[in-house]
Image (tube, rainbow, N blue to C red):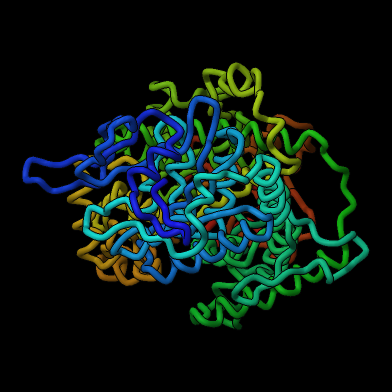
Length: 626
């Protein structure tokens, strides 16, 4: 039937006809010059005895579900990475008694790992399996496993457009003709992967035994990453001036450790987060002086170790939310659907204000996924700093997104509260995702939380790549270049536009992308620093952050002034003038000095911002204003 007794493929077309779940395969397109393209857009019936004259790919599913699982490990990062990932997947399958076949896909060195199932496997379960494996295997292309209608992969023995064929390296191709894998085996495999993501560690009284160490030797507490507690979030945004920056840093790190953050999550915040001032600078008799780059990472690593150990030794007793896994799964499905809708509208984000609009949309999706709420409060400055754009750009982007129906204003900004935005104006979460989730039963317990962790990490990694001085427009590279750069990761298969060609040339000019055998990928992110220095834009985001923090503190100052004017008070005003900076402030004090006013008695905002920069507000007061 297309294979010899020892498993060698003797007739790839006969094998394809025997294993194909549908009555056709997809064949490669050919351009006007006769070049075979990596696009399988045409159909070829399987009842034909003659094989196609060009490479073909077999569908993985029929109308009932997936009959074949094909894990496509591409060679964008080189053949060694594909080999490592294929071996890892094969070991997992072997551990669950799942028969499989490993093939070398062609001359580029990629790998295909094949599994045939006795019964159809629901697309929701296969999609979850693909995402969980992709988190471990960077070369895995999950596109064929994400879409039951169009997902297809070249089968063993099929020709490659660059020459050669898909060659069986491990296993017996007969396993694809005589399926033995059950859905129960796939479910057990998924459950193991879910448990690995959601690992909560030993019981609370186990102390530091709960601490794990990442590949770089930095400790962390295993579990699903959560948003920082309110106190730690406020501390992260707090400008400390000449105060005790180590106290603010400790508040940030304790909350981050308890929320299952990793060292890398904090490392990328060093240039922009106000609450990490102790990491960036040291206090001297003449004020704060910058630390060398190496000392910054060493200081953060040392303080992080203390924070993780403290939280591990002093666990917080909190209740268990029995609904969290379901809510996390529903929210993840919603955000992923919204992201896929945005990806499909690639032209919407490629011109005019589109690049900044996409950054803001991704930012709101990230906030919503963190909070597990479709409605989130976020002021324009916070959004701007999270996206690497200006606050006015963020404000206009919010208006455009709302006008086009991507988001909806739920509540305007008022006082110290920013505007609240709804990411699901069509109420898709309850109208579609909550209605008749027949496949939810195939997901093991904890799958929703694990899926949320994976998607949140993807969005955060993308934001970390794009939020850099070099991608701030003006004299730097355009915003669209940054958006494209952040998506040039192994396994990415996002729609491209005509504008991508010039952007790739600009990125290549500054050595920010490199061309692999299967397409462009971004280079080491450290190259962004060199490019920013070359363009003369390094330090732009830090300066913007400091300016916005001063503006936020000044606004909080005016809110306190307004509350003082409206509240009961004695005839004598005992508050200090803004130029009388107190040498000591009681812990937790909320007393602001007098707000600067002009000759007409109105608030003098220019003087207020200058006073903030000069230290009119103590660290405690700035914390209240943030």
